[in-house]
Length: 414
Image (tube, rainbow, N blue to C red):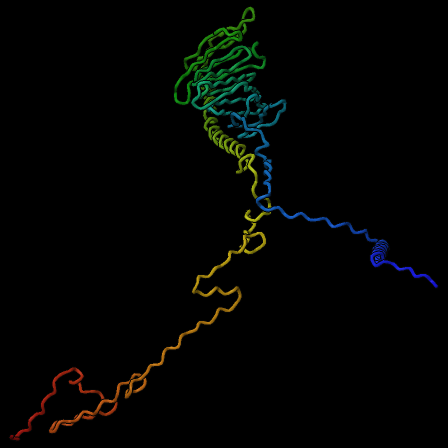
């Protein structure tokens, strides 16, 4: 007799499940599909209170990246060719170009250049002239203003302004150093430099005032003082390498030529003043942009992330919408009807039926007056006139007047 083996139900269910899994995995591999990975539990989004605000990055603007403008003057007039050498690089000059400390300015064979500085000190260079701006410090109303210019060659006219009045202004030449005390003058340096002799001349300002020019040697010794109009010195080398200041004999034609050159400098100063006002306004605007490149304070976190509701261009969610505040629960006052749901038809208004009027016994329905008894006519009284329907009443009765008595007939007697 064959022996029957009994398999427990638990073992049968286990084998059935394993077989189904193996069959399903082989079918998936045959179809070329990758086995499924266990699903990852998605983290619940953090509540707004738990969101850590991230600081907004500081924007990099062009104004913040550019260095501060430290220009001290502008090109006020230009005729022909002129150039500037700055940081070992030479470039052509144009009208209204800014001028910086350390610039070397030069004109070509046909060039005439006018430069106006912040204090309105102005230089005009004739052709084949060259000067350098060695120092320039100017503060409006300050007492520590200073400026140093070096005339290397050519003919240069100058008009001193605030720096010479409130501080120290000097003009160096190959053979001398000039202390300018608020005046106008002309400096000529030949191509040969100090060996050919340097000429220094004094002229009146635009308002007619005459300042002073103190002439010193390169060793610091004072060589002379110019304080009269159309006077000058020729600084020439002397014995033992020293220089001496020899008075100049300025002819009338030379004086007229110098005064025309000085008037040209006055005109350049008037134009350069306007250019400097525009340039300083632009400097102040750039400084304001650097101080506040963004309206937001530094190190202040941005409480609103890009794309969040409430930012510009993002509408605020309405109550009841995702992301908005929950819709408030409406409560009705006892004795009042609740508001209808959105989209439902409002209930019809019921009107009360007026009560039925009870008529008294003997009265007519509808509130009509009861029938009155007919008036009995007195004996001997005149019968009442019957008025036809639609006839108008008598004008006397309509006006309330008295009734006119009948007229007596002629010949009748009572």
